Length: 211
Image 1 (cartoon, rainbow, N blue to C red):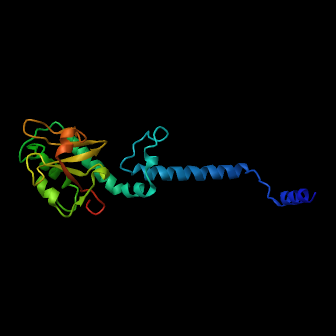
Image 2: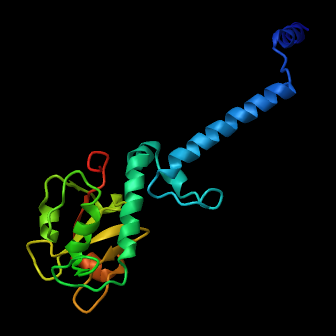
Image 3: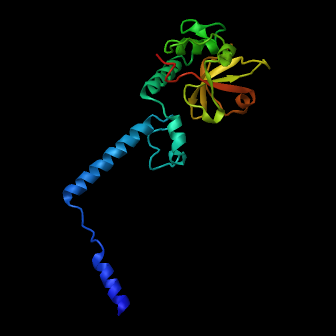
């Protein structure tokens, strides 16, 4: 009887759950929608975000919050990256020409990058692939952290310097001006040939570097 009395007293003291009113429900739904839209805007700036992944893939959910924030870029940088990729793809099919650095001439590997990037940067890039690779003003990027717009360097014929460069496009692809007799093209970075000759990567488009 004593235990029963204690339980009854405890039950009387417990707060009753009051159902939300229709107005409270509408307010709560509006707050959730606003938060969801804010999250989507932040994720849209993520270098690995693509429409359609939500609900069908947990690819981004695997990222830790710190990693997600580290890879996010500002709208200004994202806009510049979009311009870079667009201008690079405009040159697809143009012929490789040693020393070329304009659409009318054709391009060699570094000439293509020199032409596209230097229109958008506050500080001009060197003209040669090895000059770009040795440029101390450009940040080295680990292979696993590559993002769209990064320069990737290779040793094709030389053993002590970079003699080829392309631009990483994401999803394991990069754009390059390959060699005499071939045209500017998109290649697969994961192919054994490129992995065997890979030297390193540099990040060019940053908040500080764009005009």
